[in-house]
Image 1: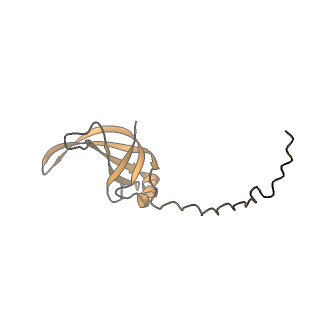
Image 2 (image 1 turned 90 degrees about the vertical axis):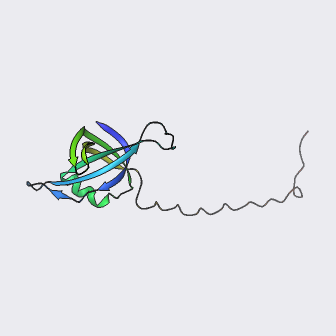
Image 3 (image 1 turned 180 degrees about the vertical axis):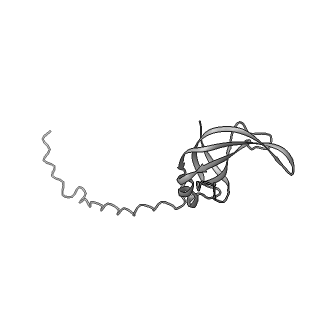
Length: 132
């Protein structure tokens, strides 16, 4: 199992299998390793499949650029062929999920009233009946 904070890079449209089960595929990315000569860390992309009620429930809340925490199972390298030729991609199935950043800002706490200052009379009303 793989667990990491990632950023959503792409969200595909919801589709349904022949048995009616919902499927949503998202691509996420995270940085790893040391910075290169360009001053940037390398990136790793993962294509994640989300199935069933989890896919239907999460779909409206996922947006490109959102930072999320994912737990991915069945992580493996998959070969594919495109117009550009053969390639490989890292894929897995979503097992756990949590939002890291909120889409709506949290309300600011109400301003606290300043404590009232206590006025002192100074030393004019000082009783100097000190026994020493």
